[in-house]
Image (cartoon, rainbow, N blue to C red; front, side, top):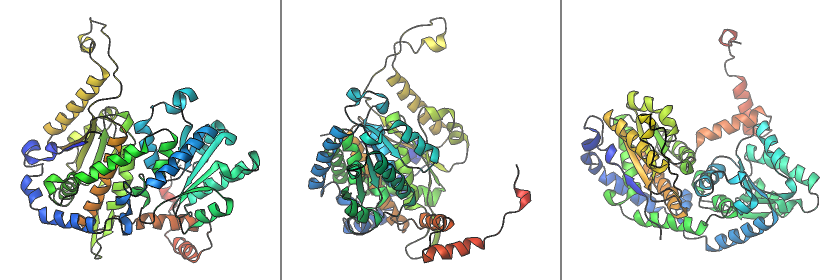
Length: 471
């Protein structure tokens, strides 16, 4: 059994960072009743509605075996595995692969990797698509098309391109190069999958994209690359077990939701910086950014009251962004919490040799390790923020492995659900994103009624003035 990840909020608290800048224990205790109500609401709805993701660690035994068998077949037949998806269909697979595989995975030989090369194409930049096609051989490549609705323009445009090329270059049997991950009952992709005979995995109806990494959306890409998906699910179970109480000081996800909502509502903290001190965790910050922004950035409560609530998530990387963002965090507005992701034990140690004794500012590094240096820089950054009266917190991974990653993913999904209850907003919709989609499809001439209406609406927007265009 893996060790627990540890959430340390000392540097959020007033008795550490100062009473002018921090949160007091009394602030948290004062929200105990609200926290209990939030926990009860999430627990009561567990497994239903848009909380289907809460049961993913428990109800996928047969699906996991199917995924593992499919992954073995892919490993035998293909040299490259490409995910075509966007948003939650891409950010989770990217983050988990970065966390758990060699950081130069695709650059290794097949013998070194042991599994197919791995790509996630989550944008429609034409140069990027051409670049992918330049480096993969379609005859030895498997494509995983991930879209729940089957109407995601970005993903389905990629499907149209790839399927046509497969027909041309592979010919008979091209369908065996495509795996669909989609809704089981409705949508364009499930219809295409049935028509063409694609191998298909299903996204449960109560699992939204940004909560889907522990479903086949994330489990299949992980398994193809040799990641232990059962251990990931065990990690999620372990976190779930830690959160089976309405007592705020005993439930780490509930406590996190409470301190964040206090910071938002009472302290004007509208920026949440996630700063991993490990390249393996770099893209966990990207995954978090979508989860936090789409879930909590809302203009009205569930009762329709205008609130325009939410925090802007920002990704940073320690130590890299000490040299680009830290100046703002220590001396800029008091509107941020910095969340450090720290690794207690890295999977490798690199020692620093002795040398250049004539330069004391360099020589002192000799005999130490990069492991010690990155830990020292984390501690230094945390202290600099403390000295400046800025709030921070730390989540420590005992080691970055499947168990700890499963814990982390499930932890923040629970935090988000609890925070939605505390803020009285719908954490599971994204109307602002839908508006953008409708407008984009209208520009391209979709003939549906709502798109035609949007075309007319967009045509009536104010025209730009020539003097505001320089070039």
